Length: 447
Figure 1 (cartoon, rainbow, N blue to C red):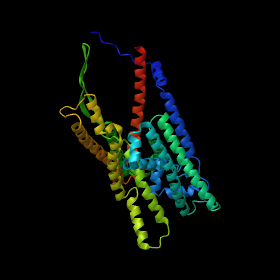
Figure 2 (figure 1 turned 90 degrees about the horizontal axis):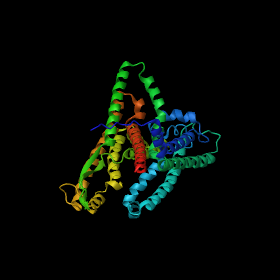
Figure 3 (figure 1 turned 45 degrees about the vertical axis):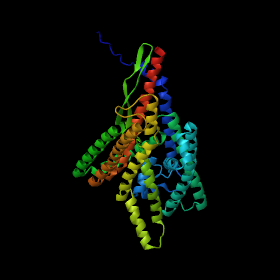
Figure 4 (figure 1 turned 60 degrees about the horizontal axis):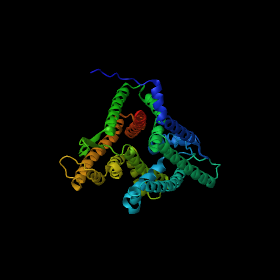
């Protein structure tokens, strides 16, 4: 038999794929929205001495951590200083409440697209409420810092204008995020956080080079730390792409003289179904009480015992405290299970009903409830492995930074690595999906 030659795609073929799948428009739209967001980051808030706050923020772990995800908007005290935080926190609360309140659960599971739109509207309204509250807390925090607020500014005008501007900025970031998700490539919220981390990388590299350039021992530690980061990246890719395949036996069907079906297929269950969302949600939940504690700690508390207690609790809840990491890993595990429980394609009962409806089955397991129980057991095991793996990835690079004393790389530590790799993989998969759709379009045209 003659071997069929493989035709390599030409430049014209690639351009045709680029245009026909609508990929070009989606990518250009995403870049345009990111540019609008970056322009907003550069717009300062009225009445703030930015340089004074930058100097204070440089030695504050909580502010530095939040600034990492805002792309520098927080340290610059721009109108987008709150970033995507209120929207993400609102999404978490609405999703958690949807499990508890039957009416909201019905909207999510039974009313389809119309129900999800209502939930999205509730999320937007609650985002505005959270943004007003967070902007007020942020203004109180700034007012307690000496020299940060310009003394000639009227305090009433300062509070009113700043809260309005920060709330509007948070709503703008939410709008950009939703537009990217709907019309662009990837998840808008994750992509904004991804770009925020990327903008801080040059500063992180500069600070690290200053730290190790004259110290040979620190240079060896840096190589070790980079090797650990690289291993973590490989592990993240494995975790993000790993699936548990459940074999499905499909029934044979005879139509006329031909027999169709009868071939085995499989259901892929991802080891990490939530992707980067459990990490992002865990950070949002943890940073909220940390910020409140830090603000309370700056107030003039007369009770010495209460003041000392708040200081100690604040130290434990800081981004490098013991309690923070314990709660962080616990939240990652809990949120991974939560995310798996609300995903439509990971509902054992629904999958078992669909298999029974079409006459398919898992080898050696009866259809119906036994299949649902078996799938529930499989999903529990895979999700548990994925959650523990995600927790380990989140912990190891941070511990490595602590023991090597190279804390300038904390900015691209475990959390940032997981987010960056996860978002990058999601973008690649979406591009592949668009190109695959183009191949199907060509196939249908040739028929």
